[in-house]
Figure 1 (cartoon, rainbow, N blue to C red):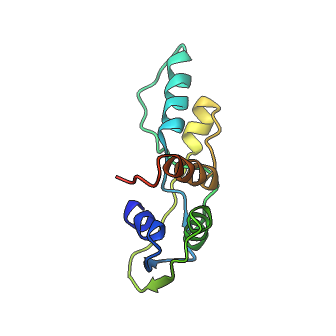
Figure 2: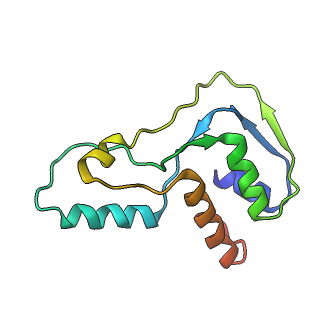
Length: 124
């Protein structure tokens, strides 16, 4: 996503695949800190493995359009053909075990883009 973000900021053409597939494979430090805080406050900690990603997946094309809108980009999007299957990450176990609501894909992407805007487009 970083490479795509740089292209959008620079108004370059973006090549993407599975534009109509759902996407939620993103998380930010804000969400990680919130979950760590919840875990530390819990009296009993189990040693389970958890998937952790944004909630409420959105279409890949919607992700790109959202980023373009935030950066006022004129980038063109060209769909590439690929034989990869897209997937979304389930947060059900975190939600059930910790009663924790994770921010939506749209909210996390917006928050990350706003941080970049506040640092004058410095993308690592």
